[in-house]
Length: 346
Image (tube, rainbow, N blue to C red; front, top):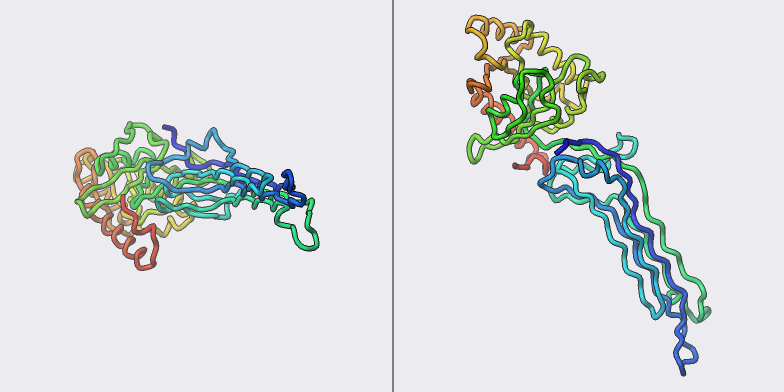
């Protein structure tokens, strides 16, 4: 299934049905009086976050959503039926934005969340509503109120606890495969990963979290180079970033600086997010060369560097334990602040 994380759609709620102008006409009843019924209410447009979806591909070819118009009122005080609602079902983590792509309408960050996007118009009153001692035979009724219409943007930001960042071919997909049951595409050329991948890390029955692997970043990605930085939105919600640097590169410090620059240029707090730094593919170097690369990276970053290999499994468990500690700390903060998203579990 194709991955789609942004789309623009048109929504319109239903118009209200018009009220009826009618009079009672029966044999031997001289003054029947008005009996026009009310029109039905127009349908609403709702959006709901549901489990089991991980892409917005359903909205790629169906982009216009219109709720039904309310049925008009009829004689004998028969009221029109309400128009049917439209419910847009989207993955958990979807943001709804105005047409300007900046104004946030709602962030659907937990399953079952349901929000009204466009309210249907009220139905018009029939002439039975207007009768009185002064006007006993009203010949007018109200038209139904019009519905609401607008264009909106849907943007999916996957729900994950830990994000993997790094240059293309840094070993992120291999690490995800070693840490979880996910089976992303792995190859020896850059940009193997073209769409985010999710995997559930199961350290124990009480220690579980979701890890996201995104396409690699290159120099100038914030200006559109490579695959750009749009996919970084999928790690905005994470508690910590695991930054993998390929130890076989000539200049590991420069590789680290390149990715850090793109993270900071993207904004949204990614530059300030906790980071676990690790050298990957350590099984490919001899101990002396590896020690030299580690020392160079620690000097440039000013932080400790882990050594991992997704192929041999070296250092994977230790790194995941450190990531779990960061996830626990984030969930504790979210719980203290009363955030519902922080209590989410896979």
